[in-house]
Length: 494
Image (cartoon, rainbow, N blue to C red; front, side):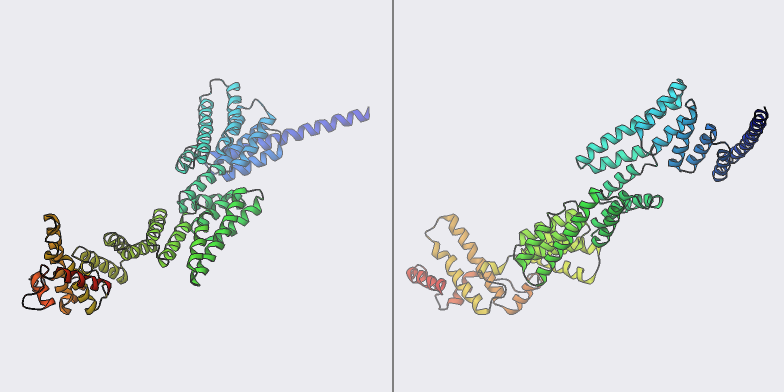
């Protein structure tokens, strides 16, 4: 009897204590509500926590704290509180709604859908649940489209899909990382770096974000720093296959490029050409490094006199990186070497517009001069001599060409042939007039227009011929046709 009486006294004391704790907890909840209305969410969180500590079985306290955590953007903690709330009270509609919202914000659309469907069971007319279900369906569709687009390497579409999905799932690191990776693959490195850095500020151990940071550095040709990030990502996520592959490619690319550079410096141009070609097969996605490799191979190609291939390599480099000045300069020089002066001028103009240096200005002026000269008659080509030909070589070339194209030599040919040969004969005389006169030759070589320089350009091809071959009557093909042919043959042989 005494034991029973003591038990009753203890139970009554406990009940009284529980009621005190309950009312104290309610007081904390009300204070939390006041701070919540004032948007002082940190203080609201503290009071809701005090209420939970006193009454850990009250679902509404967890629900209130979950709402506060959501306002503080602490969605994972909010999700845990929401789940605890509905475990304590499965009919707690707001608890299910908040759990669904947290799942949605964190990018788990399937779990969010189940939560919103539960809300509809509890409150069939809930318009909010209907709208959130539509949002969840949209996210699932954008995820599906993004996956297909990534496989097709349509990275712009992936970025678009992730932007749309993030409108409802703003706290989803997975969506942000995929967007950042695609931005990097599109060459939009600052944007990709910004997204990855935002994630790392919130979660410094996020392997995916570390991988993206490394990827940006890798694609910007900062290979050593990139490898550090890939290694760190693998430390946080040992099974991260993308980081492992990128790390391997980065090391291989650096090694092969350095081998090519070493061979080039040693003068082993064929070996350097092959090494740069091998390096270009390692990672087609590395735009900046590949642009440099193409330009390096073009430099080697020009050394090997593969000028057309060098031009093609420079064009590929520019296609990968339109701001790559070195590639424009290399291509322009190759154009100059192949006498494609209009193309050379165009490239030098592009360079000078970007970097207005004295050196670039002089290169442009020289190309413009060569272009102007190329539009005149090329007297050296007319005589068939090199631009560095000596006076004797010029005379010999004139003698040969003049005899070859003299009208008398072709008197028996058709009218059309006679006309063409006469034209060539006059051009030969004109070329000899300029190139045999040191002053005129110097002005011509400098790109000046001789007629504009008040130089006497009047001449008679026949008179030049007669003066050159001597004699009052000059040289007659009709009288000496066999002798002329023999003379021409001797000139050609000699």
